[in-house]
Length: 70
Image (cartoon, rainbow, N blue to C red; front, side, top):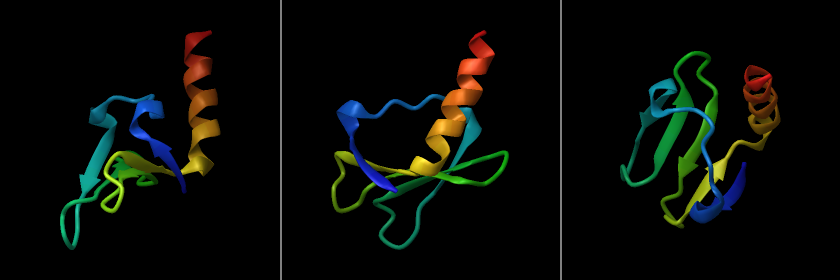
């Protein structure tokens, strides 16, 4: 995971491809892919203007979305 400010965050998929999970204080918002279940990103509880982003899926996601454009 890496921390990204909300002004720099751009989601490549629409909300229908994600499912949200909240636990404990229900302040942080955790998002998972509905198809494969991978943990994609979360809205941080301790720094609400930042997202925690799973950097291990960003390159694969970028390549997949770029291929759809060609």
